[in-house]
Image (tube, rainbow, N blue to C red; front, side, top):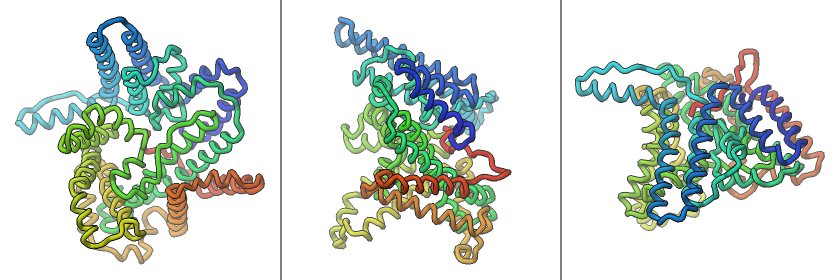
Length: 498
């Protein structure tokens, strides 16, 4: 069931109405039933995978709690607890590996042996990737680690824990919640709150605007150009690559906003997943603002256990490269995703290495780092680096990415920016100009966010008539300018494939 579908627009109000009508003691049970139904609308049998991951990590938590309370010496306790954690990770990651990476691993193995002139005949498995498996697997594993680190107590109530793993707003594309946040909220009494409902619905409207009006419109242009990059070479590809950065941002930010808003209506607060990432002043700053739940997950459960920055600069750089290469692989079973991750890691490592030279250059040239021009240059430079890496994310493999880069810079046709040729890439002049206006709205909203101004809260403080008029106008804009029509098929959110 997609957020941008009629089914969800029926499903969600029904869930909310029943949720606030029933007694507190069965609210979590109702949400658990609704969450499993939500997921089973894609593929009912794959709900068993969520259940299996839930059972494994639930039992792991109980065992860790049990061993913690045993009157053993610390060495024995530590050995048993580490064994439980390793088994939990092994079983969960084995499931993830089979469904997401087994064919990728077999292909890599075949190529390695072929390079050594050894021909292998390996089978190819016809496996459909379960929606959101990477998200709920990481969420369940974070619980195991939190119990192991004694940051939380093991959850005794299986149904409450099962809801933590499968909570429907963030089940298939995050944000990847932490047990310290979500599990604790599931323990408290939750009654309907009009203010939370208003703010949640505003967030959902913003998410639908980002997805239906911007992301799906931009996707038409991007898909047209990338689908025939030999014809649409040069500046067509440059514009399409810039717009893909907008598409993936609005697509994923839109999903996160709808998820956060839906949870807010239910009086559950999810973590913020985006913080104006394209206004970042460096690649490191970008990754503090982009997909925050995943970035912080890798920091807490991979980067720090590897040693973080505690074991010298060289080890710090190696750890950072491992994290970003792993992040790339997490996103998809293709070398191109790994290269995308490595590029973002390299940007940060090189940036830190040359930081002393940059500081000297600033001092020597008497530059003012707090000036608008300097900040703007940093933002543009960061965007260019990040946007270049998106080519490997968007392309269908490394070979295609290299061809696209060649076509992008080999063909010189800047006149297409001025002769209306861009209107022949799937969007006519009205839709193209509407897209630019909407992107301007997005930039304005992000700029306000950076300045500490939350537009939705400003609107919510206004008089009732103004709020009502704004909501009516917002709904009408989404309905009129959203990508619909007789040939429209609800577009999956990009991150569903991960």
